[in-house]
Length: 214
Length: 214
Image 1 (cartoon, one colour):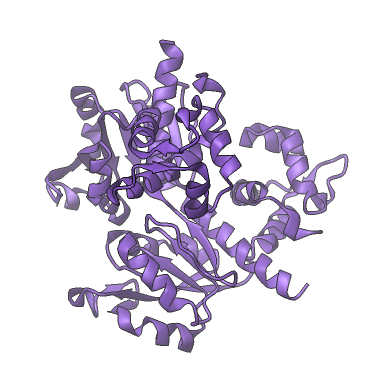
Image 2 (spheres, each protein chain N blue to C red; image 1 turned 180 degrees about the vertical axis):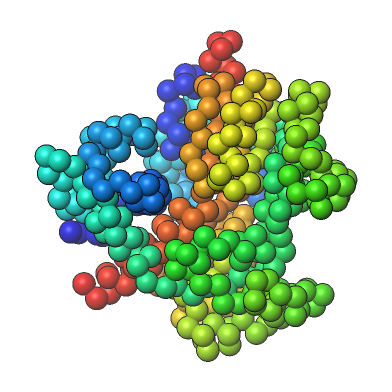
């Protein structure tokens, strides 16, 4: 299993497999063939087999995959078979939305702290966590072994903040600020650029309309 | 220019080009070579030329691209040279965060309405728009020619809501609910599955750690 060679495209598809397998598990389905999985997920069975072959194939035999086993294996690959602690910088609506998702907690992402530079928010509670001054974030990260920092701050603040956090021992930044971050290799960055997504949507609206009136 | 054949991977990169070109424009840069663009964007110059060739190449000559022209052309391709009206269903923190982004307005996405099923939110103002009962959403869409509906509702509500909106004339759903939607071809769907993104982050943390201790 040479994890390092697996493309980000395959990785990006794993959470979707995980989601469908979770639903099958909840419905009590024990086995599923790549063809049946293909039908419900609307990807080809050969794509599914190819994707799974990156991880040794998960041992499908003539009678399909064991749903529970596949679910557990994918959760290990995704690193969600253990807990990850996270803090949020930027306690506005987006930060509060993210901190409030109990679903993330169920997946092992444990919300430990919220920080903002607006004094009016200090002490405000998000779930059971109080918003603190952003200047305390480095100490808090070190004292609590925080792995993931969520950036729900404007782009102007994101670049210097990433710089400040470089030596705190964090492992990743989940970046909602609309700017690319330049960080050392030991910090992983996952971007959620909402306006990029909205522009893609707008492109697809146009493309569909042009296909009707070429 | 055969737009229909352009891969979603290329499309997904266009907003990033657009963002960097916007920054260059603001800094007063008039021309840029694919090599200079490559340096600031950290993609290869050949990738840039290949991507642009999908749209006729934007006429780079020996002395580089005209920044303003390129910016305008990409904005046309993305369909953001005109206005799109949108409403939000689900006026919780995430819905309020999205409705509040003045950046989207600047790009031509005009926020026209917010809907929720929680009566406590009716009448509450998000920017200058009042939250209305979700049962009014179909009429509102028809009367106001709404193009885009943002789903910031739980996944259980998203599937029946997509069904309800099928005949209202909407052109797209920007879907934050953690479920895949099955809609007719005339409705484009762009998903923002936040937990998928978080799992990808977790995978990349693990992969990095394994690369240190193989």
